[in-house]
Image (cartoon, rainbow, N blue to C red; front, side):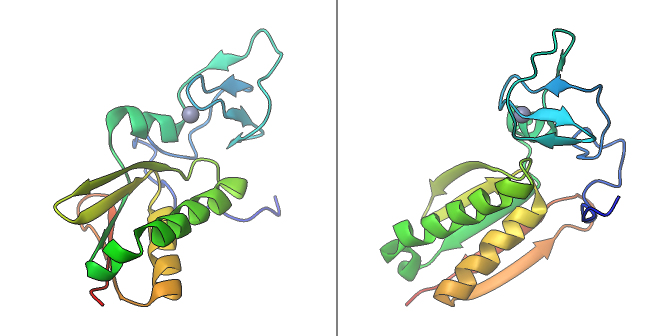
Length: 160
Ligand SMILES: [Zn+2]
């Protein structure tokens, strides 16, 4: 297959969120309506096939379990003043990722003690969001991947 490799997403086949897990085709995710087709989850119309299976896709499993693979923390007084613009960049990054990688989604955006936390279903999306924000607004970007857990934390801060 000449298609782009899916990076190192999920070598661990025991990982319940493994994006390369095989499903019967077609399988329909009742939550986000992605369809498992030709070996991957795609954004397409619901299969008419009456034998189509239903199963939560890896992204919806993470959503259900509140178990993000990526976390992005945004803070600083500059962030406070430009919150809308910056969140727009984050949403744009997710929209663009979704065109080719529909399993890469933002799970939530929550603000707590002046830090906004964005949770993503996929570590690559978290990195991508952090880099896009730093490219457009400078600031300090730090990306930390856990040694024992498969999760990446992206910190972006700009004070002024
Ligand atoms: Zn889904």
